[in-house]
Length: 598
Image (tube, rainbow, N blue to C red; front, side, top):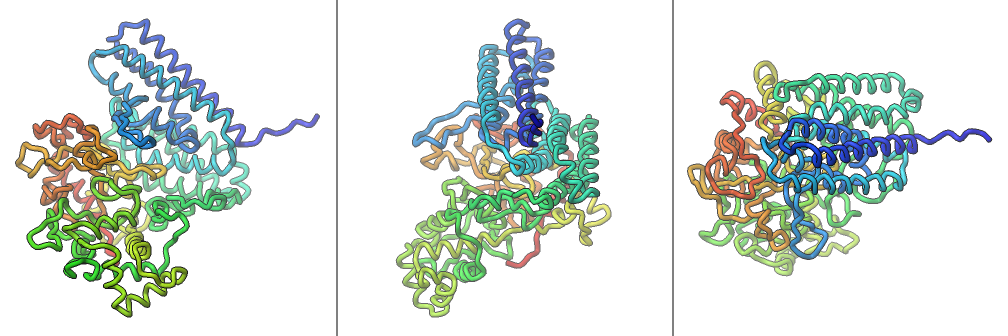
């Protein structure tokens, strides 16, 4: 009988099953050590635990692609969360590698039984993952997209130390992760060489060099993340995408009608075309249309939308101020009334599965509805609004052009759709930082100014830990590598900079579906683009400038200021940033400006 060659997907499956078996074996050994060893010998336990983490990093890229929820269970943040799949408030306690690491980071282990319970739970999640590994239907597309997604993970989360805050082993772990995905990718080397040998050779050379750089990096704070991102992460990401496309192997967009968030053909994630703002839309079949966008802009600037005819969307979201208004809290359409919170900017705001500071809505269209009915803002309803808009013949014609299938109907659906279309057009990835990381020259940044931006980026992504909440490339709470989750944080923001009292606003914890103590005072992590124009800062506008904001973080947030914030998610440890380092970080953030006219 002729020998049948094993397919590449099956070869990769076999190697991943072997790797998960190694992770399970390391976990079993760790549990035995917990039961037999003096529990306070944390050094030995940490060494044993590192074997689990290192082994897990070999499978993370694969698991993340086929079962993302499992990654959250096995290596998610050590914070409680709600189970949003059930119609009640159900708190899920933290578990997984990061939670175990947090316990092992202490000088003395106080509860051995908890540690044993956590490792047993981890083992069960690994067994479950193995079952998925064995049964999932694999294809070349899934593997190549998973490897490319891992490049995003390493460049945005791995080198920032996001998932190993206790031991600071993120750089060496990233090397392991990169090597594992490269070994899987080597199965496609012959295929790649047929469509572009020079590109293939460069790809694997860059991956090997990147692994070595990560492996040799011993000083987390000193690691040059700017150069690594520019010269390795972005080129590797681009080359995998180019070679994948050249082979003729399909991509997700070609086999699925679902709106994907990442446009796979974009050369880097720091590119205007990288994200699909309609990936977060309520109607997955709706797409951008210039006529809808033009109508949405007209509506955005129209004061007819408000009951008093004195307020438009642009009243609070001024395009000249990066769609903010400069107030701590905005004047409303009702005399002597102010909005409850600071007006957020709108650049890239469409790149989110959650809206408002408190994350109370899931779609832009719903956000519009809240503004329409809000007594301090538009203070009206769609029926009244539609009647006013129908009196303007220019607007009536614009609706007919934008919504011919609806016969130009002016109603809640078409109004919210047009406004959302305009907001989804406000995508900004053309800052000097984006251009430089793509390898382009930027005349406005050179010499010492450029050096300060680079140092600021390295601090932002490293020592200052900014990027563990403000993830690149949006520098918001939009979580890589799949960009489907939006994080909120409990920072302990005071009433004003000199106050020792937390702002009374419950934020996300005040929304009925999130009404849990774990989300009390939690607010959505905003994007930082054009931040030089969006002062004052925080949900209550407490801080007038970036220096004040950075000092707040440098001291450890609310807890660092002496405020009682039992559920603070921000580390209360001081960052110990010097004044020069703070100014470098600010210089970097100031370089996230985009002068495009909207």
